[in-house]
Amino acid sequence: MASLWLSHPQAIFTGTAADLDGGAAGGVVVDTDTGTVLELVPTGARPGTTPDATLDASEHVVIPGLINTHHHFYQTLTRAWAPVVNVPLFPWLVNLYPVWARLTPRALELATKVAMAELLLSGCTTAADHHYLFPDGMEDSIDIQVEAARSLGMRATLTRGSMTLGEADGGLPPQSTVQDPDVILADCQRLIDTYHERGAGAMIQIALAPCSPFSVTTSIMSETAQLAATNDVRLHTHLAETIDEEDFCLERFGLRTVDYLDSVGWLSDRTWLGHGIHFNDEEVARLGAAGTAVTHCPTSNMRLASGICRAVELEAAGAPVGLGVDGSASNDASNMILEVRQAMYLQRLRYGAEQVTTERALTWATRGSARALGRSDVGDLAVGQQADLAMFRLDGLQFSGSHDPLAALLLCGAHRADRVMVGGAWRVIDGAIADLDVPALIAEHSALARTLVAG
Image (cartoon, rainbow, N blue to C red; front, side, top):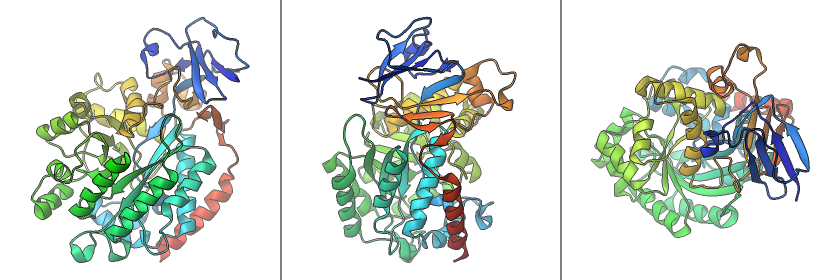
């Protein structure tokens, strides 16, 4: 057994009771063979068993690897695109759908690598992507993403999205982007059979994710829920992101969004929802009672002026709350530690500073996000858990004069991790990703982005 002691960190947030009594202030011992946490070392102590190697962490803040629960990797190709910079969700989508319909396999591959690399450098170790675009030639989109995730050594929950309600049927997407339900369901089953890993330490998982109420029929929602239950995989969709969406559901289905969710068999603890902003008190209680999780996407919600998620009330009701950066055409970044900062500040506007602490915001991005993805093996640093962690240095100019290291991580705006470990293996060292030529990636990705919007 090989072991590594990350000794005496400047500060540590484990997401467990160990934070309350200094039970991990002496650091973390990782079993690098199994990729799990072997021991938490109390203040002033040494590991119970002499480690094979020691890394001095005295200049680092150590936290569990951050978990991103909602993204659209392909959208890194359309960041800050002038025609949609100053519009809300529906016109934003109407303008972008025709551009996205020109997506190519190589463009998706590079877009996925850019998004995941940016996440990794920000301390993220597990990322969920919601991919719902399958125009002609893009049938193997999720396969492409699997290979990209494996090349970067990150954990990924890749959701097989779908759109079946095109413009001709009263939906928003162009007809070129919608698919036949039988094709969708067959591909969902293929992807589960081919790639879905179960149990602790899973690197690739598949979930099923019809895009939104305004882009799919009720029948595909119901059939997807049945398929997910048969295969014991999770369900994901956008819900209650804007008032326009609420109005659409009322006009088309005669239902508010949570009633719609219930009507198609999705109101359960198998489901996690992107955004989840416009719920009333009764709906918050129903989501909590069902254990349906909600992903808070603060930057995107501010960018598109969609509203503020009722995160504290949802959590109090029993709904797991996680964080997501959302797509890079509405963020327009893929930086998870900055998203934690945004979540803390936006939620303080609704609930006050006392309720939304640094620790609570970090918990949304770690244990809360893990619960949203149905995982119990990641999201905190405890004995037996996966050794997924991020280490940040606070020696930059923006940290000069700061006093509380953990608070400074968010308040002073940390944006790049110094080291990141996934399953006991270093994926980021000295702020750089192992085995990735970032300048070459940027050059080709940027060139393809210009080609895509040019038509």
